[in-house]
Length: 383
Image (cartoon, rainbow, N blue to C red; front, top):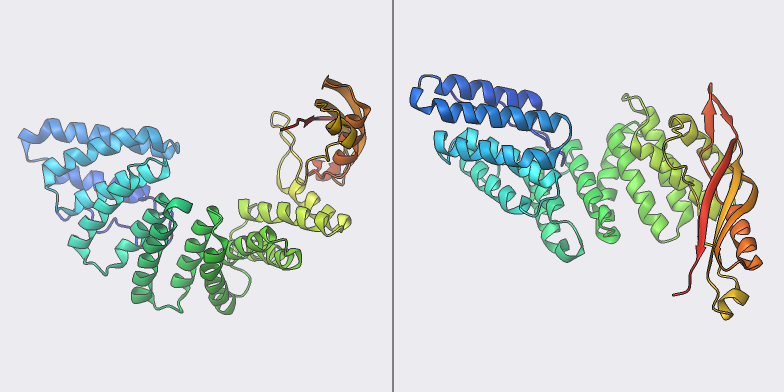
């Protein structure tokens, strides 16, 4: 039986976890294929135990704990099938992916081994290699490896161009994913090239109803925000929200929530506080209030250090208690505790600052309500 030939995902997205179905097929076919080899019973049993263990851990999202079991399954697979078998390529892919998801330093080495094995099976220009190169790019992401990261991402895009054409939706989505990877490491200038291309293609082909377009718009908005281009960043974030709201996939998406959160900051910096309120309310409506979680502001900034305290070398901390009203504004702040210096200047600076902060209001029965007894420490410390 040809094991694993139908279980390799053909997607061009970066997050290519071998599916539960794929892994199940691999296990079932493996067991049937070797059932006649009685001398391998111990290895078969060990493989099945390792597989079942890491499958259960992956379903819980515990990638780090799954690594030893995935490694054990790979070693047993190499013994039973030989290194050039399709099963072993799949097992290598699985193991590499879990290392990658766990942020393990071995991920790049094992991913490159998976690439070698896939190239032997499918050829060096095969689209099956695309997710591996995307994962390789993400596994080495960061300023110290930015050129290596771009090399892997460009290899994935080249394969996608050959498989689907550069103007295809598949290529555009992959270009957005490459840009998103680079954006995570604040390589904005390079990321924009990938994001803008994918954004243009999807906008022309699908309008503003694609979640992929929404992701591209979000990262482009972040790029403009990082350069204080608030008008442009506002437009991108609004487009991102529209794309997620127009998508057939319903429910609050983390990127949509993040776009609302950035718009709160954009409008506050543009002195459009009432427009910021719309997005404070949107976040409050979309996220159930949890009294067990710390209540954090959507928009905040550090207070100015009082000149007299700074000149006197004073340091201090102020605990402010306040109300968050139904629009997310801070109301009735008061000092309830101090540490170190008791300077009135610290009290005034803390209160003046916190009055400018914004929160997502709590919703009860579908309506925003005030949240009392919210507390936050502000610390004044000289370097």
